[in-house]
Structures are given as C-alpha cells and as structure tokens.
Length: 423
RNA sequence: GGAGGAAUGGCAGAGUGGUCGAUUGCGGCAGUCUUGAAAACUGUUGAGGGUAACACCUCCGGGGGUUCGAAUCCCUCUUCCUCCGCCA
Image (cartoon, rainbow, N blue to C red; front, side, top):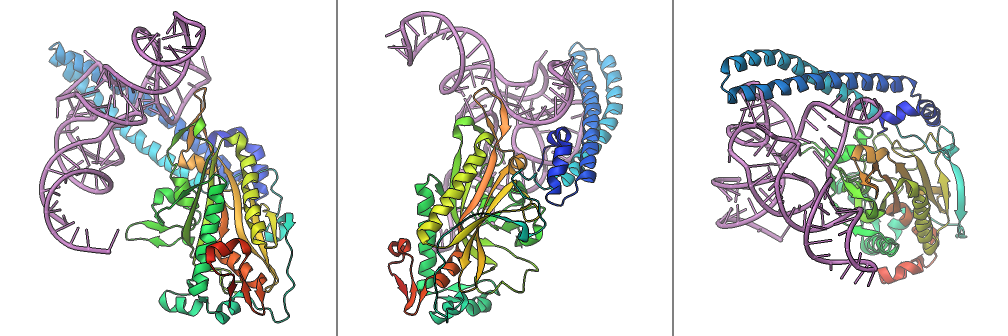
C-alpha cells in the first residue's frame, strides 16, 4: 500500500512511473487526496468536540466534589448535545477511512526506474544467461513422459485422490523432491538465512499484510468455515511474522528461509503449457525473505540473485535472468528478477524463481517499522525470492539429465538422494 | 469438550469510576564520577493521528454497552494459564 503523504509529495513522478505498468492513476490519486483531505478535516472537527467534552467532564467532576450539584447537572445537559455530534463525526471518519483504504489497497506499487516499459512477458529484458544446454538424443522426452517411464510421478493418481494439479511423487521421485528441499534449505542456511517451518494456512490480516488480498483473492484457496487461506507461498506467513513490529536498527537485516507446500487455484489458466509439472495447484517451494533498511535493499536484492545463481550453477542447469517489465511486474513489487531454466526437451524456458524488492509497499500495510539509533522511526523494506520452486527445477533436471541409461542425478544432490541414477 | 482464573508500556508488575497515558522495578538512552569499565547518583524513555511548531485527540487483548466521565462496571469474542476428559 502506498503512503498518502508520498502520493501527495510525488504525484507527478508516481503517475509517470505507474504508466510503465499501464496503470493510469490520475483518477485514483485525486480520489485518494480528496478522501484524505476529508479524513483530516473530519478528524480535526471530531477532536475539537472531544476536547470540549473532556473539559466539561472534568469540570463536572470538580463540581460534584465541591458539592455544587445544581451547576453540575446544568453542565450535563450541554454534554448530551456534544455527544450527538461526536457520534455523527466518528461515523463519518470511519467511513472515510475505510473508503480511503479501499482505494489505496487497489493501487499497485511504484516500479523502480530500472523496470522497462512493456505490456507482457514479451517485453521482459534478459539481463543474464549462463550454463550449457545439453545435447540430447533425438528421442528425448518431456518430463511428463519420463515421469511415467520411470514411475516417479503419477499425475493420474493425484487426479483420483484430489484433482488435476495435485501430483503424487513416488519412490525415487519422492526422494528426489526431499533431496531438493534439503539441499535448498542447506544452501540458504549456509548463506546466513534462518530456517523456519510455518503454518500453511493464514488469516485474513496476513493476506492483506503481504498484499495477496484483496488483489489476488480468487487465486487462493479459501477455507470459508474458519476464514483462513491456504498459503500461495511461504512469503505470506514468513513476512507476516513481522507484522506490527517495531524493530531496532541493529535487528536488521533479517534473513529467513522456509520450505512449504504452496497452493494456488490458478483459476482460468488451463490450456497450453500447463502439462506435467509446468503448472500445479499444489507444489513445493523453498523461499527466502529479507527485511532490510531502505538504503541496503537493492544491494540485498543483488545478493539474493547471486544466491540463486549459485544454486543453479551447482545444479548445472542452463538458465537466464529476466528483469520484468511494467506489464508483467507483480502488484506489490518495485523490481523483480525472474529466473528461468531452459528445458531442452520442451525447447522452452521455465520460470523457477522470482526475486523481488517490495520497498515499503508491504511494510506499510504490515506496519513493519524500525527505530534508528537517533530514535527516528521508518518503514523497513521487504524482499523475497524463491530458492527455489521445486516442480520446474525437477522438470529441468529430468529433461536435461536424461540419458539412454536413465536420468542422472546432479552430483550435488547425490549425497541427499543416496542414488545417482533413476532407471 | 467441561470447570475455574487471567490479559496493563521493551519486560516484570501496581492500579476497582474523575487530577491516570497510567505508581514502581528492570532494561534502554544521556549525563556526573572514573585512565576506562562496573557500581552509585541524576535526568530521560510507549504507539498512532494531528500541527509550520505547539495545542489537541485516540489507544490499558479485540468489538460493543452503561455513565457527564471507564484501565476500573456490564455483554461478547479471542488468546493464555490451572484442573478434568479425549488424543497423534
């Protein structure tokens, strides 16, 4: 959520920046400023009435003490009028505040100046590319065929038990999943991240805190009976640990990592490119989250990118990094780097990580602040990235590591799997 | 699931209708003393809104009510503790 004071101070610059998202904020900005004006004047009026009422109450107390009951009762009359108007004013204030928040919740974050203009993923800019694309045999298979051939992932069985998009991992497939999770967590912990195990359901306040609500309401599974949401990413519970916190400057930076299953309804996204592991309703992911001082957050983003690069290098997967354009940038993000692994057998790039700086956008909703040594308080910056999302990494490994003898396990994973070939 | 008890500032813990945004202790910060530190002493120290700055307003788990006036009384929800039951 943007801060009203910032909108007021930087209106023109913000309007221009939001154009990169193809978001015309002209109207909503003036709505925000109008509502804020109303809110402040209403509050001022209300405060005045309350102050008067407080004065009278004190006076009445004194009069009772000194035994001047007649005078006290006269004053009592006066307060009843005040009560009427304070009631009206506080209702108006509450309504205005609510309206203001509703508008603010629906304005996306201001893109960083590095974000290229653009309308779709076509306009994302490749900023880095590394790794060798393997030469595969002519009869190389996509991962969903490999999964069947070696009986390591059973999509039909998941259909039977739950529905499409809920695969069952079997035998060496299940073991490989577990190996990847452990390997990712170990790498992140070695890089200074603290490991967490988080709840898989969150309440409404947490959904708003990180910005999934109200923007992505339809994309989360909602347990209506208890008004809880299945998490779409570990980002939500992890970042919300710091909701309503006043940290001290030397608590920062904070670096967390956690493995969770992730649940996404992905409503309306059926069709091409969703076969096999490419798009699922439930998938596993290891996430990294950082809380940073504003002046350090972009250096931290670069560090996160390096962390993910390091993992992909060790896995020896060919990958590239894209800087997302305005049209593809997430609602809450200022700057996002997407990582994609090249799937040789499918001959396409698969997104496996998204690494973002949210600046103060989440922190403002979360009320996540820190106190500097000089006592001043300010919003922290939040960042997160996948390190990494499992299914497409798995797809990439299966497809790129296939040989006539079976699927080789990347060297770095062998200590975790206990085998080096899936056959 | 049943029966009781509790929720106050970073922490501990007073406060049962008016001068309480809240005694006190610890912690934090600043100072005195000291070569330096510790100890001791002195001062200072919650959050949000609002203002050019003051003033002023709101907040004692959340919501609602009684009252001229609520941390204090009533209702309700949530959470925690103790006892009983059940249980991976």
